[in-house]
Image (cartoon, rainbow, N blue to C red; front, side):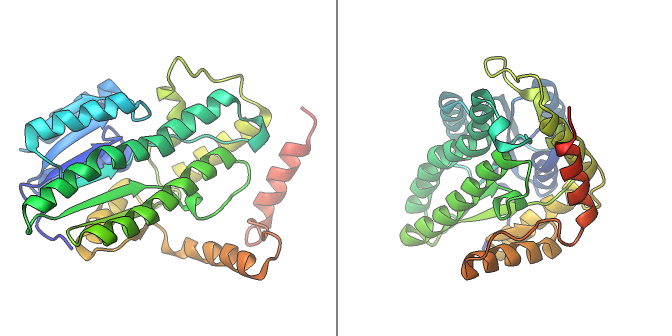
Length: 302
């Protein structure tokens, strides 16, 4: 467990908004060196200016986490400026919804590229650096936090592409935790599984790359976007609250980090479905009116 953050280096993807920005703010308060990466230049510039004004040593780089070469270049820049990072927050992510067969190939490439391959590139680029630093210094400690979602533990309808990407991140993180434990006691990992929290994720289309254009949204995708906007917008737990939970979890060497512990009841139901080989439980059983509203909207003639 790591309780002293002062002077340590943290790499944060998706640092221009949401959890990434709030974790950077905590890092600045704790006297950390901050490597800020984001695909949105204006948000990145603003975050870098804020953290520099707060007294942090800052390296800010615009990058698309889905591009292997860009994450590799980030790794080289971090090593040159600060040495191996003690903390890596693989946080960048995008949201997308709609009925799963309606997602285009470009949708899949975009969401999987950012949500899954972005985390994979972060793990691939930074873990070897951290292991090297740990080998050289028995007192050196590091921690990797991958941002998944409660959608990585559940399968809500009408958001399949997002669910798929986040389940993969949970799987990658659990495996990373076990793999690290085989080779070192100095580096560990956590997975962050937030529920609906007001961040910029419901407006992800703003950062969609030109080479992966969106098709005209289908009815189910429009409905999914509206439901997501409403749920995310009405979230009572803030991104700042979640960022504090992340730092508390690192200090406690806690693997699973939840923004809404009460939502775990739904995960238990899903696991019982699996254990008992029963068909998946209606996810709207506790709020049937929402399920009926969604079904009615999808079944109405366009």
